[in-house]
Image (cartoon, rainbow, N blue to C red; front, side, top):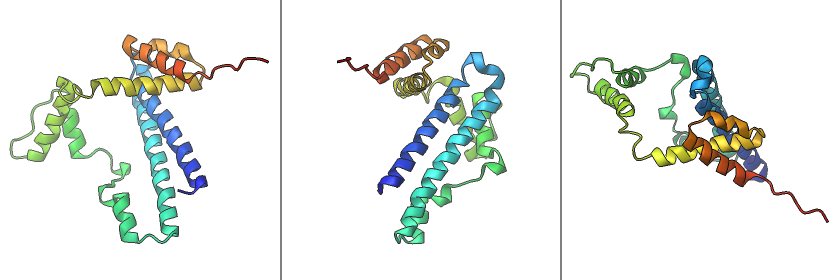
Length: 181
């Protein structure tokens, strides 16, 4: 990867990480009044920035002669969908499962699959194995943001286990002062 492209990718991915941390931060109870607006804004900011990363790399690949069908395959264009269309039925069924709504009709297997997925979050089935990884990821993101913003006090609003691990992450990121000579 050419160095200027690598630098751009690193910068943009760093922005995505900060937006992802804010998505997590706005799920905390003390920020409840803005959670809908801010989680959606920051999640879409992260998504749009990752799209920019993809398009920069794609433009480079195109410039260096990659075939368009290969490029489309790598960009996974068949998976793409617009946010402008709003939530899909699958999204609505998954939320219904999370919130304990009535089970969809048995003849709609797709709806039942998404509904069951939503129930998995409520019942803790989907998070049980990833719990340690999720905790570590959250702590890393919160610790990184606290260090970058020089705001270690902001970690006090998180659950104790997350806050303690995030402080350890922030401490590791502290730049040691050089000894004066």
